[in-house]
Length: 134
Ligand code: THU
Image (tube, rainbow, N blue to C red; front, side):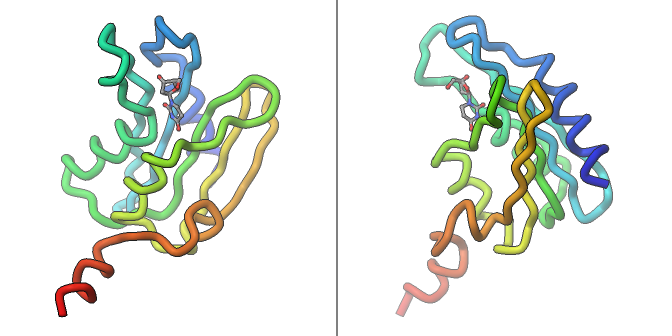
């Protein structure tokens, strides 16, 4: 199950548009529907407009109507796997519960697996807004 997701992330990585950093990233998220959505990083000549692979995959899934997710795989890094940036972790917090598995794999096939709770403990998410209204 994670193998299929990892393969989808690696395939998405090959479609990265990263002419400036040359750092290619692919991501694949499995929705509760069973469908897999992929994304790659998309850079821009105005550097700051770059969008990370993880957010591209999540936005594609959410725009397709998905709201619940089961797992995320990220393909990044050459030797050790590249970890998702802080902005993407916050973006994940909108939908991922602490148990959602995150798998990160490098070009060499080195893997790290963790839960979303390990990646972003004490997240700020939708629940905080509900509680903070009082
Ligand atoms: N990048 C991602 O796609 N995901 C991350 O979590 C880290 C950074 C991209 C953004 C940019 O295109 C390149 O990697 C270098 O930062």
